Image (tube, rainbow, N blue to C red; front, side):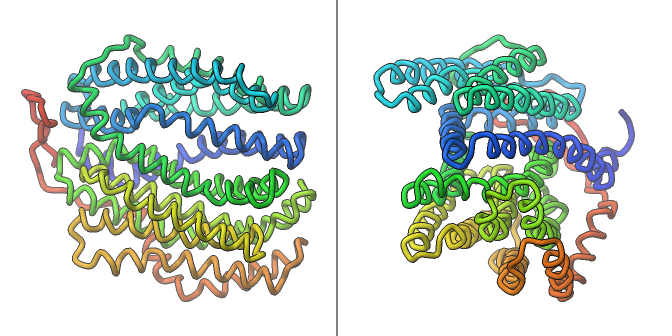
Length: 506
């Protein structure tokens, strides 16, 4: 391609990429959400709670890779940006990541399988064997998708995601219909095997273990993995507390509430998937502070102003939809109305952390997420022991995750050399509390789950948003504005490399 690189990657084209990928991702999330709703109906609260615990264990298992895939996405993105779209790309880092991941997950799978024959609980043994059977394939899917997206192949990436979700829905749903929880686990394993076989055809599968590359991948990725691990514990600590104090039945209701928030949090993942090659690449070609300031102004701050109000409208529609489709989960509606706002806090953490990593300050992330984890666990236990139930646990989750999100944003603002990072971070989090408080208050005034109450609440909520309307309009216009061209800056070679070429940015 020819022309102005900044116009090619400017906001209108960038906005179109986000929109098109969001359509594909909405289909993916819709299929996965349908899988969750189908399992909730077929399995009931008890078995659905057990399924939730299995999926939590599977997500934790992926951290056996110690963040190598997180390091790989930055290495491939920056190598591609520094060398130019047609230049030589870094294949040895990808091969090293694959070799390390194969060694680690083969060991994990063998260990889980061995332990499964030594436990007395049949359900626990079944879960361990399902984990062992799917560990390698889930890792291979993650590695493949990371590599494809870091290479800039967004369309192929989206197609593989949709295929993965469709196969999961088909196999897991059919298995649950035939054999309950046991069939759902078997369907999950079968779907993972099929998806891994298809995805692996898109990348090179020649593993290697270069010590220097592995060390760099771990240096970049391990702090991120530790932060994400703590962050996952942060967003699951309240679920574990609910399971401990209320059992799997109460967890089933709470899991229903949190699954809606998972759909809400996908918006930030969509944006991150589209922009991370650009952010990492500009940190090399334009400098870290300039790249971060652009990322904050064009992505993060608009997200903080526009997304919480939208989530408020969605929260007010949860009651009627639940009454229509899954009336047995109506007791979870008040918690779901609050918990949906953790989709914003998780998204803000994700987008802000992207800037922190681009500035090579990822070592600070585990400290922030660790503090948030302790706060979430403490507030959840306090709410449950005080009799506030799952709605109190949801409120505790919002408070703890909001504090964590504001702290990660503060780190990004500091790296971008903001003159007032604390003030900016606090202002960014204010719309969340305003919208969550409005939804909670309207839920108390109009507690019914009918369409009439929902429409009345939505009208009142729209009036409560009027003080924020000028800022919302300004940020919405900014999303569609063409950014000014950046001054020419020669490309900077990656540490330890002599590219022998340079790329000018107009």
